Length: 311
Image (cartoon, rainbow, N blue to C red):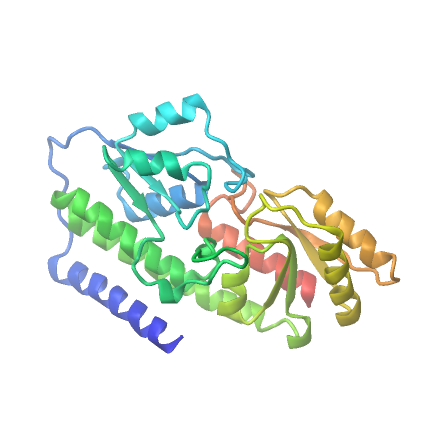
């Protein structure tokens, strides 16, 4: 953890130093048309919008609110949109499993960026049950998402060399927002009694959050919703909830509510009234006006629901 902090601090300081020394450069009057950037998820789209000036790019996401990227199957229209995009940005680490073979082919023809490609596998969590694979849900560790922002901004600065300083400046500003939110999350989680800091959700998407903020995380399914759960999984979690007398379990916006509802019934059959603590946003942002339609608002919404449910 100490090495991780030092590494991230170095990256942020370098960006801030370059921005301070060189300031901002105005856009050229004859700027070419905006580049079409197509991202896989809304979370990735929000990242790009925050690190690249809107004068340079038009950003769209293939998957809308509530869409599960683990199960997403690209349509012929999606493939056409990918081919017509100037730049493609995706999460990586097999989050978009069915899309990745297509993305691999497109890398030979155009700029394709994986936001998790920051050459530090020691910062990643191994994927349970998958050999030589990593958990893709890095956005739940805000420090890691800061790193993803820095690396993504760096990629776009290279792509737009005449506007690299604007991109660096905007990226550093956004990293500052992420770092401030990270501190707020720490404060909120600290309000939950230690014995109640157990997050039970539909699938195992919150391990990075657990590691970063000291929360025990348990999912009914594994890191991918493509893998079904069984009666044994329900029994084990039901026993945990009953024995620890947990106050709440949580649904996810991109996973069927029936999974957690079945777990709740199993616990109630034992005589313990565990409540549904709300719906968390795991693999997708919320719709416009939901209070979770940007990455940072999603983090705040989740944190507030978890804190309220478990205190």
